[in-house]
Image (cartoon, rainbow, N blue to C red; front, side, top):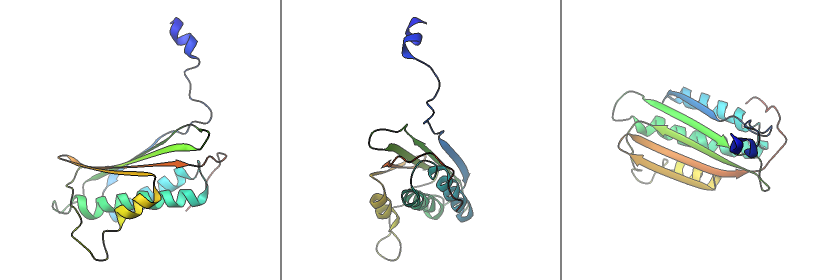
Length: 156
């Protein structure tokens, strides 16, 4: 008990932002809905241009789930979007976004009008990791975002 008292209060600081966790069937409509909900959430912590870039990167990850993860099953499975941000640091906040599916990883089939999602995510984020596994694929996106005053975002 003495140790807990020295650690200080056990409540989140006023600058804390609750994490976002969304789960839906992997359909185009649901990917768009998750993108809008993510954009609203991230719009409370950073400027509009940064929030738009982040929403685009996240949508690319969701679209990859819709287009590729469950193609061999013939029916959509689940996609989960999880996002969390640190309390403000001197140089911004650390944002981590994870998109998870329970499908199969399919590498790009070559050149053409497709295959630009991962390069776009890598351009918009500071770090992008794709972790295919036996039970699905996890995409983790990271970016330091500028700190802005907490506000209600514009509806998109």
